[in-house]
Length: 110
Ligand SMILES: [Zn+2]
Image (cartoon, rainbow, N blue to C red):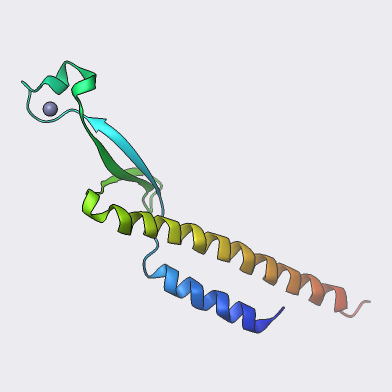
């Protein structure tokens, strides 16, 4: 395969890898820590929506991270960057697979 295009993808991966975050964003309505607050009796008075990143840690356990609205844009871009990395890796995989297929085709027989 074209080594230039592989080099370009690796360069893009490196740039994306500096900010990419795995997971998905989820919004939730919550009850607060004040027992007398109306949110505890009436679901319509729950607080939010609050933004969370849902992800799996390195041990495969489900985790959440609260994301303040001040950092929503940064987090959304980071999650998008992860998706872009994944797409680039699939493309690299295809290129490497095709290159191996080509080498197998040309291997000496016998
Ligand atoms: Zn409350």
